[in-house]
Structure formats: C-alpha cells, structure tokens
Length: 143
Image (tube, rainbow, N blue to C red; front, side, top):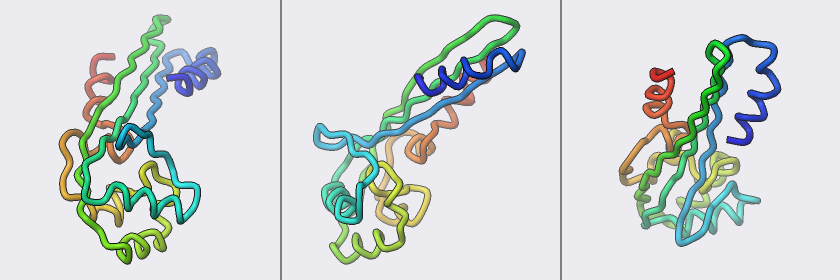
C-alpha cells in the first residue's frame, strides 16, 4: 500500500482521474517469509526446503483512485497454497543454473521453467505469478 500511495501522491495533481495499482508477493513456509535469494547457495537451500512440501504465497494488492475528486483506496490480499514436487539435488542445481530463481521470492517462477516443479495450486495462479488478476478485475469494475 505504501508504494502505491507514494506514487499516487506524486502524480495526483498532474492527472484529474488517476488510478494507481500496486502489488507485492511473499512466500511463506515453516513460519518464515522467503524472499529473493541472496546467491545461488541461498536459492539451493530454499528450493531444497520447499521441495516435496506445501507453502503459501501471499499476494497483496492496493488500488488508489481519484474519481471526480473523491479518493478511493482498496487494499486486499490473496493466499494461495502451492504444492511443490520432490526434486533431486541435481534438478535443483540445473534449475538454478538457468538464472530464473535468482530474482524470485521463494527462488522459483511458477510461470517459467519452475512450473515443472509444481504439483498443483489451490487458489489464484495469477497471484503466485505476482498479481491476482481476478481480484484486480473485481476492484476495477467497482470503480
């Protein structure tokens, strides 16, 4: 919400009808928030931990809009369960060598090569990618 609000405040005087959309995603497993890996070793440790287990992805969404002088703020989140397949150390190392995990929370991209390691999801696929499109659509339709 803070990033979206900062952008909104910066531009609200320049645009009569302004809508700002902000989103952020975290991976939660074993009472820990798993961010982007610091290095390849950190990515390996994270993927080793997640493989064969279920973790949760929380995707936050903030929409701030100025419609005819009335500022409307909507903040929400989506929780999605992600079931990851078991992986060998070799599979994890090969995946890390692609470079894909290095800028992703939880060290994987469900929309990329990492999809082959996902058994199933319960909830919003698009929220795991980074933005719950269905929830955003609902909010924008209300505006």
